[in-house]
Length: 113
Length: 115
Image (cartoon, rainbow over all chains, first blue to last red; front, side, top):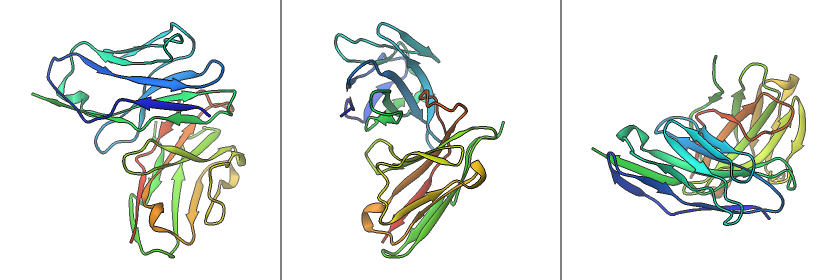
């Protein structure tokens, strides 16, 4: 069945460092891919998405490119801030497998001043 | 615009007791979801409603879990009897369309501890 694998956390970075959180997926067909973020004390919220190969999703300085050849959707940000400290979830939606959003385990990010 | 509301935020019960969680989605959202998030894991879909009909409940443990969405608005998730492994955060989400585009709006969750 479909699955999403994220890098293990926690990830600790200094402010202004470059961020990469790896995400790979297994799915039949052509899923849509998402990054959700959960800030402390808040609900999950959509950060960005990509619906087809080579699409780049971007929001709030974060980017991720849908790479079908490597089945990856890595999240990147050039310069992180303390306010980016949160848990990040990669997810996929596959019409071949119903329409349930399938999440990875999440990667915790802590940015220190 | 008001977000997805859930209550209670926290609940502690003993095993074999029952518990109910309530969700009020964003006004006008046709589709409502209940997810279970166990510590250290990603959210797992329990049930999906479209208006007041069930679209997907394949991962709902039906021997102990039940959910309803009366009148296609609010929803209640019930666990009876609870087991230790039910300790988790129960997330409610909604989306505006009839089809899941993956763009869900989540509530803050209801944290259940089963002792």
